[in-house]
Each structure stands twice: as structure tokens, then as C-alpha cells.
Image (cartoon, rainbow, N blue to C red; front, side):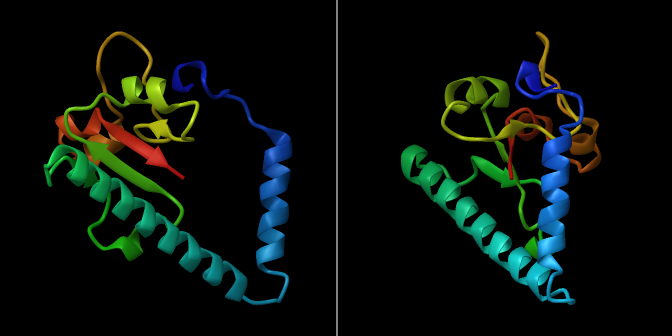
Length: 141
């Protein structure tokens, strides 16, 4: 998947690690750890979005170069994931340039952007993401 950058099979040690992390969130017998973590991740996601949009606006002089994919209400998006579309950019090419520095993926989690034609995932299509934004979508989580 993801142009040979991610394996398609399950990573059992990571799955076990996520299970342990989930156990740690509930060690106090309530959801306080989970909710505190979700709030922290949401703040980090918002900060990342602001830094990306501000940086793009300052470097290009344009205010409409990026778009968040998902509900307008930030509380309805996953707290740990930012899906952002960049107009005029092909995410696969951008990944080739920044992939060694920034850990991100192109498109949606269920889409592999291999092959000579520009395409985008059915998930982004179902979310009514315009094609010119969808082909430039990055997922940071």
C-alpha cells in the first residue's frame, strides 16, 4: 500500500502496543484519561492546521490554497487526524519530496496512490471533496 511505503499486512507488535495504550487510558476506571488525551490531540491538530495555513498564505500570498476535508465543526473530526487538501498539488509528488522529513500519507487511509493516473479515494469522493483538492490531500495523524 501507499506506493510501497506501508505494508499491507497487520503489524502484530504495534497492535499489541495500541491495546496497552488503550488500557493505560482507562487505568483510573473512568474516561478521564481518554478525554484528556483527545482534547490534547485536538489542540495539536488545530495548531498544525493553523501553522500549515499560515505558512501557505505567507509563502504564496493566497488564502484559498488549502481546505480541511471533513465536517466544518472541528469537534466532529477525529482529534488525532488532519486531512487537508492542497489545490494545485499532487500529494504523491509532495510525499516524494517531504516523505523523509514529515510522516504523512496521501489521500485517505484506504487508498493507495500508485499508478500513472491521478486518482483519489472513494472516501474523498463521498465527502464531496472537489477533485482539484482531493488529488492534493495529505493525511497527518
